[in-house]
Picture 1 (cartoon, rainbow, N blue to C red):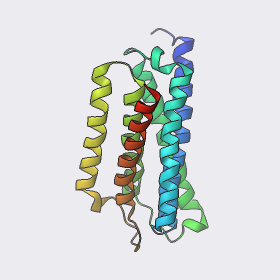
Picture 2: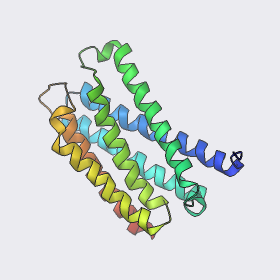
Picture 3: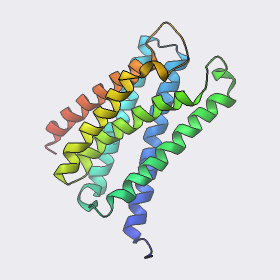
Length: 193
């Protein structure tokens, strides 16, 4: 097996770190919504943080040259690095909930991780559709992202176990993916991408 090229290792590290930071913001936002029991003002602030994070991922990818350098051969490397970065961030946030006394009133079960995974994977799919060059990938990723979101929305009662009166986490996730996709479209047309 050939050793990875230095450029491949550099892209993998950058993808891992970018995805880790974005997923930390996204999972942290979901945690804030849960801690604030769906309070509308906190939900909007969390929504803003996730959307800003997604836009920063696109800008970072465009300014680092990933868009022109990522080819079909390197795409799996970058995708794997993104997924590992996101998985580590989700695990750390949920571990913090289990350890921290502030999270004591929250119910933490594996189903909670689905909320984070859908938000992050669907949003990263939208981000990747702006970064990767092949037109088929650029067209298919939004469809896959909204397909994941549709499956999640159809079964959303299974993925959240903290009852509270404000905005439910599942609705936050669905609203967030749509609002981030709208912001990415505005960015795409405004930047002439």
